[in-house]
Length: 269
Image 1 (cartoon, rainbow, N blue to C red):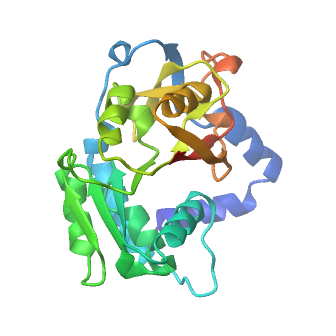
Image 2 (cartoon, helix red, strand yellow):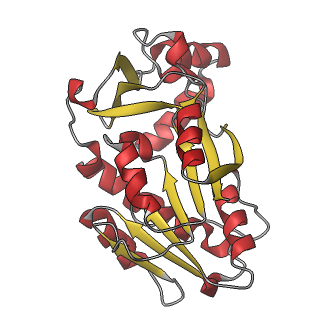
């Protein structure tokens, strides 16, 4: 009888010496990012977000939350950052969050047990119909969660705009930010943002063997953009949950690489 793939992987991992593993991680694993370009149009977009693999992964991530024991286990990284800010703001009043490209609502479901005033947090996700359908099926009566395939009416107001690892895939990211500013939010939270002390450029990213254009952003440009719109940086830090160092192909100059993505929060003056 053949062992299950995950069991076989564990066996191999257990017998391979650490130096060999490190060599593989550094030199042999397929690279995620390749090439340095100016525009999205220079890269063929194979739409990985619409693939069956991506949709299935999104379903599995949501299902995995049900098996997590949260008792006595603090959140870490960008999830902790997000939950802490929302808890602070929702102590005495309702907080409305707009989660752009939020998929199935994964972040909301993940931080929900850690929200101190759950009934005070209203969360709205914008994404594709396939992912929204998965999220809706996972909801219970205790969740204050809603979905749409398009941005809400411009006259709506949200206290927080939240974008997790999505801005870098928007061709007209500045145009998107201008639209999101119409909700008069007091806070913008960006997590796992591909930004740093580099010049802005576009690269090709591989996700489930499909290419998609991806923009690495000069962080000073984002700070200046929001500064001109009346926002200051409340906090910023490297997201050290995942190293990017091994993910670049040789055709990307070292000056265009960042070791980690960023978490950054802007607050309106």
